[in-house]
Amino acid sequence: MTWLDLPADHPFGVHNLPYGVFSAGDDERRVGVRVGEHVLDLAAAAEHAGMESAVVWRTPSLNAFLEQGREAWTAAREWLTEVLTNEAHRDAIEPHLLPVADVAMHLPVEVADYVDFYASEHHATNIGRMFRPDSEPLTPNWKHLPIGYHGRSGTVVVSGTDVVRPSGQRKAPADPAPSFGPSVRLDIEAELGFVVGGSTRLGEPVPMAEAADHVFGVVLLNDWSARDLQAWEYVPLGPFLGKSFATSVSPWVVTLDALSAARVPLPGQDPEPLPYLRSEATEDGAGTAFGLDLHLEVDWNGTVVSRPEFRDMYWSSAQMVAHMTVNGASLRSGDLFASGTISGPERGTRGSFLELTWSGQEPVTLDDGSTRTFLEDGDSVTLRATAPGPGGTVVGLGEVTGTILPARTDFPA
Ligand code: CA
Image (cartoon, rainbow, N blue to C red; front, side, top):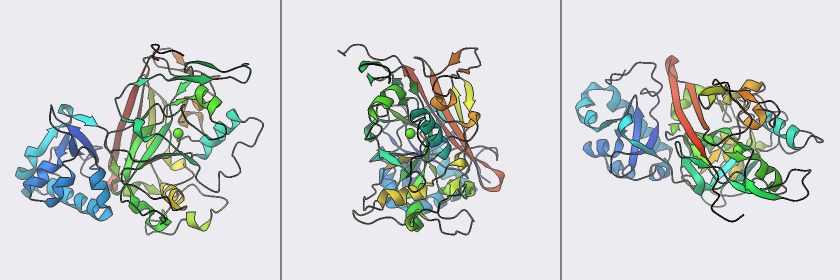
């Protein structure tokens, strides 16, 4: 129990404690922890307690804290749990709690490298059917390795940032030549982003047993995608400008520790992957290649159009870390890797509008009676998620939202 006036089922109760970067008024950006409807100013509280570690929280990103590694993250969580549940700390802590409504939230991490995976079998199958109708939906490599590409870290933005409709080249198969203009098939991808902490050395792969120790926590992530640009440019090197104009993330990083009750076994991998990607048994039964039981919803202008389940994902975050480093590539604190679109087997669980409308052939109807295939200017999309917490509690991941602004026309095509 906490001394805060907080209902036990609050999604940001003391069982959650996600980290973010905030500012209040004109103050500097610094690290905070969300508890209920408040943000704890971590540096101020830690300085008051005389903790040397306060210095990593008086910075405008989580990166310094991420670099300290799992022992420091565990110690911080234990300290936070103690001071927020033991009434004896109330007088010292309470002055450093700010109403969440009074602060501005910023990008939580200075994103180092950004990688996007493709880990949903249902999504990969749907895309294969649409993009390559004459071939097997899954490529021959799909069940042997978690496929990914390197994205653009500099255009990862925090929830609430507007997204300008991108322009670029597109060419439908029947067109004689490419044309230039604003994307007419602008889409979303509902994903989970994993925030990396604890740098590794170049040349030293991270084994499965240690992979989760480099995952600090998760954010909701919207991989905005211009399908017409993507379809023309992606062969043979993969996604490029159809993706790199913006990637939105939620402001609160929910730690892997807060999601311990949400760990579940993967749906099953057949064929068994190569040894470096194999799951090993763990006490909780979920294995080192655990999945996560997260319930998402995709909200389009106020209408929930899809409810993807993250536990349907084929590949796990630990396998992604093991695969990303098996060639000796090093990790940096602040690296961000995303799961790929989270799609389930039914229409109502698809995580992109491309799939939901089957390439625009089956429009969705919103609550206001309007219909949609792809995003129109002024449209807003919000992703939300929750997970089971300990003792029947709910862990909130908050939300990531963005609104589409019209394409720029003030440059020569
Ligand atoms: Ca994606």
